Image 1 (cartoon, rainbow, N blue to C red):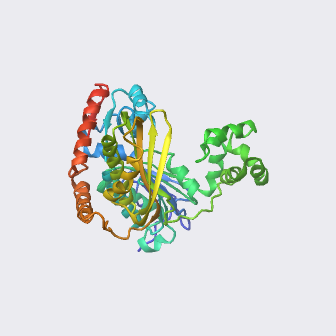
Image 2 (tube, rainbow, N blue to C red; image 1 turned 180 degrees about the horizontal axis):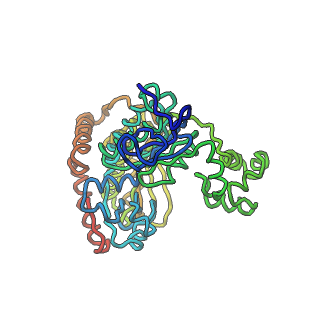
Image 3 (spheres, rainbow, N blue to C red; image 1 turned 120 degrees about the vertical axis):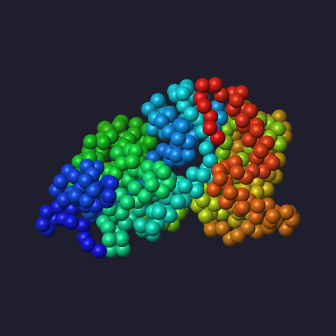
Amino acid sequence: MSAPPPDQAGQEPTRLCRDCGDHCRQSEICHTCGSRNIIVHAEISSLFIAHVDCDAFYCSVEKRDNPAIRDKPVIVGGGRRGVVSAACYHARVYGVRSAMPMFKALQLCPDAVVVKGSMNKYAYEGGRIREMMKRLTPLVEPLSIDEAFLDLTGTERLHGKTPAQSLVKLQNDILKDVGVTVSIGLSYNKFLAKTASDLDKPNGFAILGHADAQEFLAKQSVGFVYGIGPAFVSKLEKFGLRTIEDVRKRSDQEMAERFGDNGLRLARLARGEDHRRVNPVSDRKSVSAETTFNTDISEAEALKDKLWQVCLKTADRSKAKNLAGRVVTLKLKTSQFKSITRRRTLPQPIQLADAIFSALEPLLESEAGGSTAYRLIGAGISDLSEPVGDIADMLDQKSAKRGAAERASDVARAKFGADAVTTGRGLRLRYAQEKNAAESLPSKPKFND
């Protein structure tokens, strides 16, 4: 395997073609394919920590599957009282953001196409992308279904490509094979790699090296640092710290004494220091899902239908992450916004929707059926571990058959879509959702299931 051509004799290459992935000599045009899509950075061949982030992932998958909405603002989310799960870049121009109430999003962007979305589909596509990452390096640390850190140390010998070359190939392969774009940040630590991946979205490739990271960070506001929220920003500004350069003028001891662990963390990140390793072992504590109703619900059977919906989403997410849990949690929120949480510990970890629902149904029955109306329900599992297999409930002789049927339906839903296979309860719920959507949502937005 030949080494990448140097820009000049004795020097490392500083140019990389985004189209073919070859390192280029001192030229604005790729010597291999003639492309002008060239990345230029002095440290391009010596950096190895990357952050890969899918661009508006849920919306990108929906646009891929429905070309008719490709050039339109798209929102993935629930009913009018629900929240936005994702918004494409077109919708973001109008101010639509994730976790925003749906009614507000539609006020900002009334012409948006609203898609119900399918977590099962997103998990499947996210899993495909994850496997492509793992073919580059075993050191892949997932942050969510659509983003991860990669450590490509030592992969040049294995693949015959520098980390930057391997990442360009990954980016192009994801677009070709999965049909969505990703943005990549490349640097020498996790903080700077994640920072870089946000600089050139969508379909971007940005680099922060040792030589330019310090200057780049100095002019940024303190709120630019990931994890520094508005309340902490206000505290810092009262102390005269408005930019990263201001923070650098304070010692670590002073920052720690005044602002605690967060202050010390900020002081180190302000210098571009981050010694965390890329850790492929997940430290996730729980897997959950919740839904907000279009109208408050007090009837027990109607609440059970909604419980099944969130149990199915929780199961889909746990299967995608190959996790099971021994503790199941029911979450309810009343019409007066009072939160109620009930938990139950099981003898073995579970991940099937049927098993989660069966464990939570008695907890829901103890809270439902009275005069209290609820606006939200959630289901989750915790005390996580790898699945140990589907264990039948000895008191329910049909549980094993339902488990086998659910596994079979997972395959069908992943291949043919979320609605390929459903239960009687699921059909009843879908009918109710479609009816509520038709009655409660404005006529202007167009909905796609």
